[in-house]
Length: 88
Image 1 (cartoon, rainbow, N blue to C red):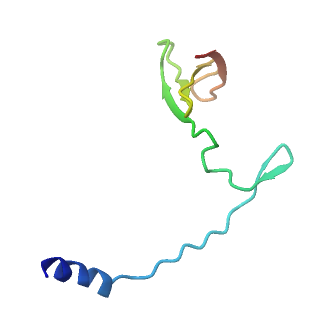
Image 2 (cartoon, rainbow, N blue to C red):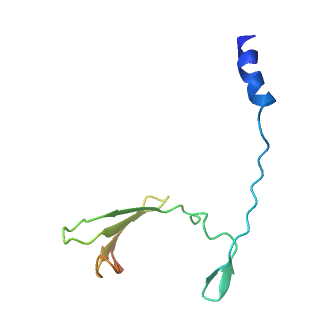
Image 3 (cartoon, rainbow, N blue to C red):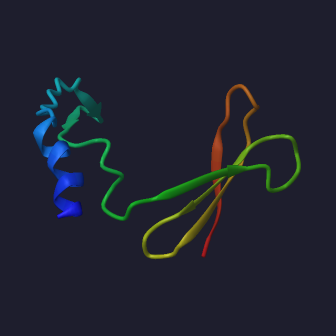
């Protein structure tokens, strides 16, 4: 009975929610992407840190297959440019 009394007001005063999305087009190499923000099929997991202590943020990318990719920042802090160094 206590569970009913606790949960009943939640259902009684709950609100309906509708999410309306009007997406903007994402175009890559003249092709429109249908779902550009789903994270890819292998769900990459990026991490930014200064690995080589040069004052620039480097990129580490681990995907669902547990491959680790290291991208060294060969640009600047205000205009980073990442170059693949290793994939293990």
